[in-house]
Image: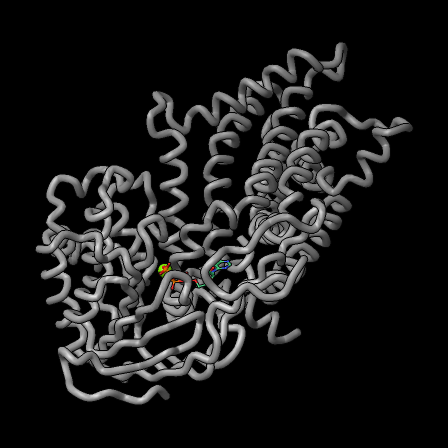
Length: 246
Length: 263
Ligand SMILES: Nc1ncnc2c1ncn2[C@@H]1O[C@H](COP(=O)(O)OP(=O)(O)OP(=O)(O)O)[C@@H](O)[C@H]1O
Ligand SMILES: [Mg+2]
């Protein structure tokens, strides 16, 4: 059964882990979150006591101001960051779409990037080849598929990434803001595909500042503020009623 | 300790299951470097042969020592360039892979193997050049040459461990990228790559016996130059290789989850 369960998850970015020969230290912390400590021991508490549970079919929208911890939470869910505190239990095959510069090879063609992406997800060349035409068709990139990835516009890159990731049958799909780079017609298509995924008993977690996108895709909404869960509610457009924060 | 070790083994076995990924990426790397050049990766061969040629031209001793010198330098440079390339690329490995490390959950050993494979493909071109020089320059093929092949294999086996150690060093201690770069540049003169040690006293004596690279060179070179099995050099190299693997496993097991936070 596909599910996500977070229990009191915390994540701390330490800012001065590296050893260096330079004098300690003039590098400054980034704005937006909670910078604590001083000197060599500065750290950012990006997530703090985050608990929630998602089950098959849930579509969660992550909202909150810049620096609230949305991207960090997605990366914890994906397994890139090991949480500094608490427990993460995830059942299901996870795929994630972060920003465009992440996880793609800029010099390689779109087609080659699809292959690489598939290999990374543990597919064989033959299995990827089988899905290749579907992926290209869904992305509507046409002849651009054989140009290097670096020649793509943001929206084109988003199309490629989304098409590839969803064609590889993830059970849990994590998406950061940039999927919004696609144009209206593609967002409509993408939304349908996400609906299918959720209906096949998958889970979607989408971080976005776009109210429209969240409302049209999501059934639940998690508001983060300074790394803490402010509220977890049902999306009124989809279902009535509010769940209390866990 | 056991947990650390298990962590490392887990990372490595996951990476081995994903061998298709690093094989594909390593080929991309080679392709990228030579994409718009006419000779493509053959430039690697040209570079190597030009280097050997220059050294032979400038340093070839007069008289009866002259004969084997081309072979001596050819093998020396083959191994030295390989080790130097591996080490200097390793210290910045995790920084260069930042985009994949931040966007995927690939085990770190995938990046290690990607570099290991890439370096050995590149070395393959130099090996072709080296074999050609050996065949042209004198010593006739004999069975001890097989020990040289064994020596090369040993170097290949220790490569992933070396990459791991230097990659963690470079990630946790960024200054080391420059330190290692400089040491390697100087190191060539303190390693019997192009000078021959004949038991003389002085700096060369210490540089010969106390330099770990000497032994990596000698396990490949002595069987061909002297036609014998260099037991001492092999022993030292095997011990060093095991130690390197131990350190690599410890680092990988203990710190692999920290890398993402510090690159
Ligand atoms: N690599 C990092 N090193 C140190 N601090 C970081 C790092 N990445 C994020 N942070 C900090 O963690 C906090 C949460 O960042 P995060 O990127 O998760 O925010 P976000 O909600 O995605 O913001 P945005 O809406 O701008 O995308 C911020 O305070 C940020 O400064
Ligand atoms: Mg973000």
